[in-house]
Length: 260
Image 1 (cartoon, helix red, strand yellow):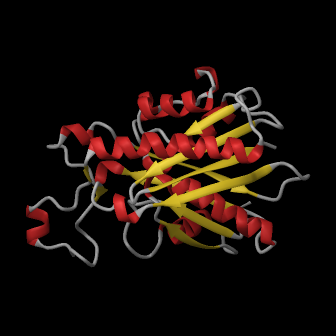
Image 2 (image 1 turned 120 degrees about the vertical axis):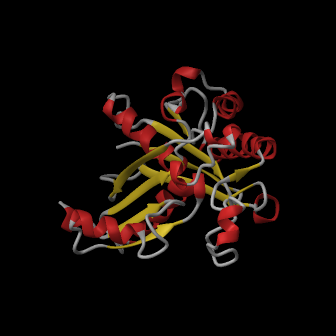
Image 3 (image 1 turned 90 degrees about the vertical axis):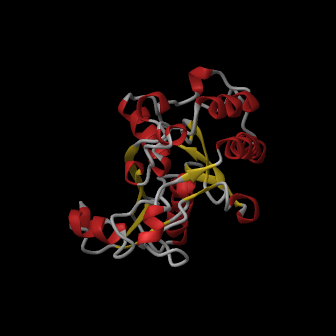
């Protein structure tokens, strides 16, 4: 029940408002009277960041149940006059509830998270609306409240980073293409996903992909993939999952989960 939840983490870059946090709105809407919460801004890597963060609260013993949500309403920040970017994105949300594994060797077993503000800050951003460029007549006229993306630069960075971190997770945990059951990647585009799978040496049958249905829902992509795998009864006790993401910042990361 809602009152069993100790913590709510909402990964989003399109909250209803700057404050109060989306986590507080969720807490109030679901009646999680015993939970505290906060928002996490990691762009497309937000859910992966949030999953690792939530797992730390479980491992430390500070929380018994943690809700981690990835949600974005990209339609609210898309410039539909810039078709090369607007057509890539969608709106979506998904989430999980974390609790301690029933036995050792299950759950969130490893994570490698990265960021690169030196090289990423100017290639994928929304320049208006923050304290640097508060909303004004000028920022609206200059269309600064929409997402801006240098697609070529972002693709080059994403295709390398996601494949690298996936390979790193495999090597750190002794995983092989045979022992991995599912690659659950951020749904940026099919080329980046295929490149990651190719580096890992896994077949398309082991790659969760739904970008063709929803587009890039940013922080929502990975939890939506998990939800659909679960709904389709494709996850079983002991399934080895590698979750990978890449987003604005730049931010990227990988997580190894053994399903229970």
